[in-house]
Amino acid sequence: MVVAVEPDFAPGIKESTPANLRAWFLNNDGTLNGIPVTAADAAAITRGGYVGMAVLNAAQVDASGCFAGVSGAGQPGNAVDLAANAGRVVAILLTTDHNRPNALVNQLNLPPDGINCVDLVVSDVGVIRIHEGRFILQEVAPGWTVEGVESVIGAKLSASPSLREMDFTPHPGQPPSKIYSDGLSALADLSNGATVFIDGFGGPGGMAHYLLVAVRDTGKKNLTIVSNTAGIARVVSFGTPPGRTAIDHSILIENGQVAKAIASFPVSPSVSRPSEFELAYRRGEVDLELVPQGTLAERLRAGGAGVLAFYTPTGAGTLIGEGKEQREFDGRPYILEYGLRADFAVIRAHKADTSGNLVYRGTSRNFNAVMAPSARITVAEVDEIVEPGQLDPEEIVTPGVFVQRIVRRPDGFTGYD
Image (cartoon, rainbow, N blue to C red; front, side, top):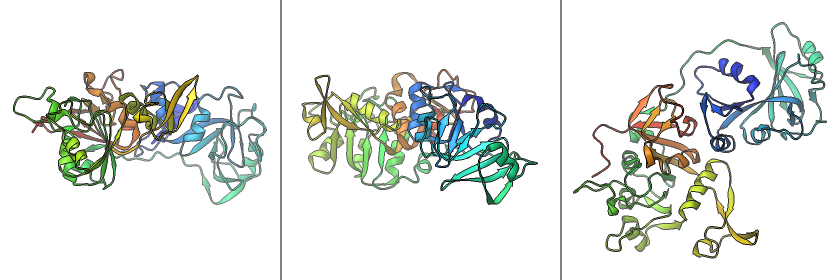
């Protein structure tokens, strides 16, 4: 779970988090658990559904869960983003701050930064839940009474039947591991009809060959695969040793597991050497959605960033644009494209730490980094797994929050039959 916090609260919240909860702290300073992330990654984390809890510095909260941030009108920062996209919003109110009169009100009298979004108000004297237009006191600080909290909060509170004293006891335990012993165990919950992102560009470089074999061995059917190609590494032989055959999407086509491909280069560049997908398409066994390469990359990025749809000039007036909504901007036609999401992504990286942070090798990162945020479950196949802190933060490309499972490629596995 990602906990997005405003800078003033980051240290204290992190220190009080139970050890058995795998939490990532996204701060306004552009770091995720102390690791620098790009603005694009931060936006993807915020808008892509990764923020389970946002902790915001509120000036005012009303009984409907609307809030106004302390920055004031015209300076929302990322509070508006977090309020609209976090799974749960917690507002912090400090009763010792005398510049915040009437912090809890029936209706805001300040410009709102979030509408009907605050679930919990945490102050230094109590914890208050907002429910059905009421402020319900759930916890009180040691030595405080309901009346005492009301007097400093400035609002009428309903005492919860389970009202208790605030507990600051640390909870021992270990977070669940992301490391899986093999590909099949990492894909055990892959289901029939799932959508699967498959990494790679054209040749075998940067492709999760071991995980592709595992997908095949699950035997799951009616899969929709999303990839730059639909399996041409086998026929183009980029970098393939003499006498060997590259493992690619073709093994899923041959096994009758694919119902549809969304791809940019689905067929072989050689007429005399058709790909398995091409042959299956000719037989009417699979469907195809053809997507320009740049549009594919943007659809993947958009899906991970919570952007449901966008307009692009690419493909307007061509077969690509047929049947799609079209609008004109600045005298130029644009077509509507939709963000892509998947149930699983199988991607390849060079190294991972146990938190899921990934380092790639050269151009082999290709579509890996853009696919990871856009899948419900991303499984990374890596050569080496290290402990947190052993990767240079400047080398990390994919933050671990986007990676749910990690599998080490077995020694001796080459990616070729």
